[in-house]
Length: 109
Image 1 (tube, rainbow, N blue to C red):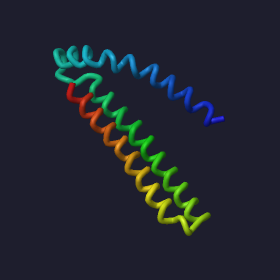
Image 2: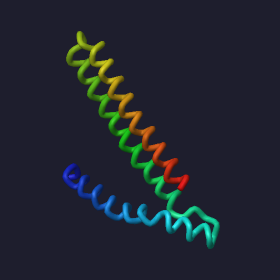
Image 3: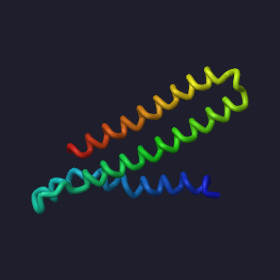
Image 4: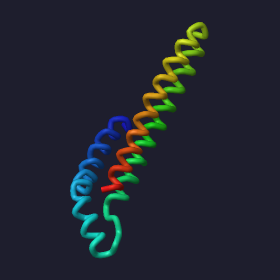
């Protein structure tokens, strides 16, 4: 039940957050003019980092579990499984780094 509900909640969350990101520039300029704050930029950066880190950690955990399960079932292929698992972990971590870069770009605007 939760697996079926999760995509719908994610889409609804994005539907509520994306319009705020679209108006972040105007809000940031208005906030700087009145109170000296940064507006929505910091909140957007924090949300991007939180979502990216959560998704990356979940994917890395699943990769590790699948690799351990594969090595336990077939110890003879442990070297190949380990190499493929490390490659997968590197690709997952690169996506989290891209998220960090996007957060810095959002904060800089």
